[in-house]
Length: 157
Image (cartoon, rainbow, N blue to C red):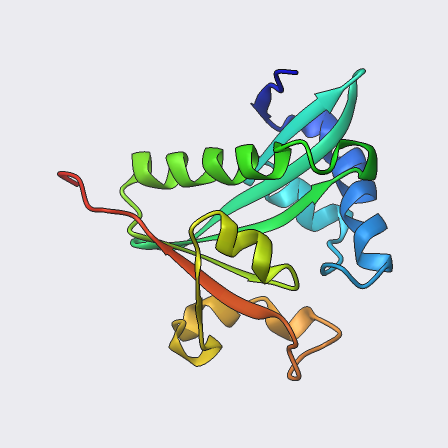
């Protein structure tokens, strides 16, 4: 089956919120507020199934050469079908188009991101800039997520 990856629309925000927080409630990812999703809706991609958001991901630009993949969530019925990998690929392609050399993620699902070509790094190797929103996290300052990075080969940026 072919899945269409699309940029999210404002009307998708409540479904994205519900999907992310479904997995956050299970301790599998961090929760996002609805206002945060609205504020960053341009960062999100979605996959729809039967008119509903079945998967989402966000690429958030942190600095001129650094972006973060956040909020990857795929409904249970759509998991193990390659949708997560397609969403990550869409973010990496956009990062490359924007001239961003490094994409990172903070996750509990390190093995998935390793499969997508990311490498484990110590969180202390990430610039302080990436910790800007961490103070809002209920796990701050005892973050238990793992950091991974993906290096994009420089074109003629």
